[in-house]
Length: 153
Image 1: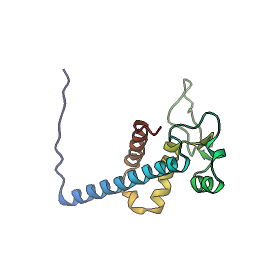
Image 2: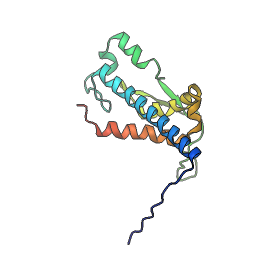
Image 3: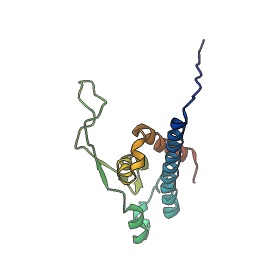
Image 4: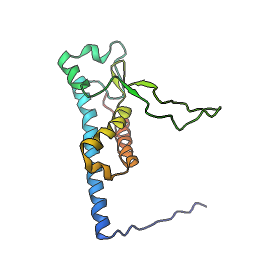
């Protein structure tokens, strides 16, 4: 038998204001991140989760379009600390200083790019510092799920 517990949230007025502001910031973040991906689709006319098999997207675009799309996306991201996952010997699988590409054959790895951009978002918009980092990461993962479920072919 499976048991489920249901809890009713009864925030005070001050807590309700904070929760509403967090929801508003999460909504704005979701819409912004979704727009980034949809702009990619509009500019390249390729699915967000796929690339042409015979030619790189970067090679098929006009130079100004390529510059506009890729201007804020670094070619590589660098691991800032040792990973939490360990191999069988107890050593971290990913190590500090490891480099990973953000672009593979003209295809942008959007989820990792957007997750890495959250730190910059918090610097540019101090209101986002009040939200826990895992909540913002969940927003990016929801956008990823939306794009995975959306068929743009």
